Length: 104
View 1 (cartoon, rainbow, N blue to C red):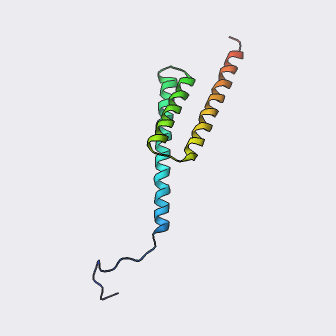
View 2: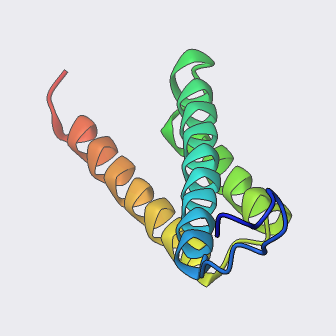
View 3: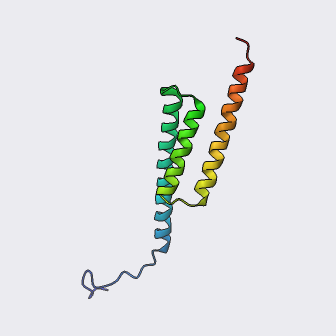
């Protein structure tokens, strides 16, 4: 090793694990960024603009579909998006029903 000049060897190290880790980090960053943008947009529409919860959920869903298509996200994204939208709709319906049942 002492006779080898700097840059004369190829490294020879297996970096498959590092590539897998970095790929996972990039995927988590894309998912996290998309989810934050979707949540902020949905909450702004629902509360700041006063359009209501279901309009906010619609914006969340539309942005989720766009993010999934543009970023070519895998099937897990679509399943997570469908589950989140369904839960938001159920939760909004429960709150709306509870609000309608309380005496004014």
